[in-house]
Amino acid sequence: MLALLKELHRTMQPGAWLRIIVPDLGRYVDYYVGKPVPSEFLVWQPRGAALRSVAQNYLHASLWDFELLEDCLRRAGFTTIIQCAFRQGAEPRLLLDTPSRAYESLYCEAQKKPND
Image (cartoon, rainbow, N blue to C red; front, side, top):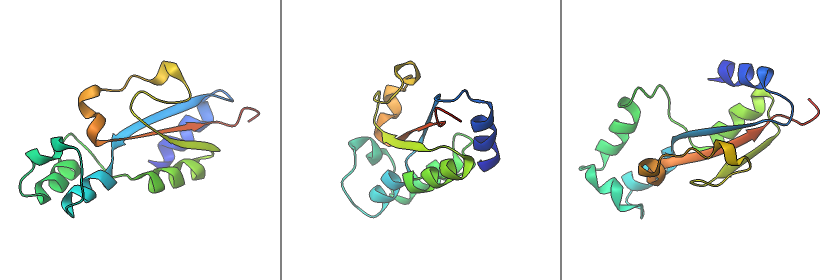
């Protein structure tokens, strides 16, 4: 993933924004340990099935929380990195979020330095 993020950074115009949407590992872990989460998580019984699903279904090759994603984006060269919410962010043209996935998603935006 780091190689991909570095290549995206290299090819982006200065000041451009990148929006990344991935399943939020933190929300899945919260459900697993019994913390309050959106009711959509209740389809997974027992709770461990949610972790199995996010790790093995939908061709996911890795799991992400904001801290890990932010670290990778910084190492790739991005400077401004923000955690966003469903259909909220710095660049309106990138707000192509899928409503049915909002409950489980981590939204992150990163900007290539404007004078880079």
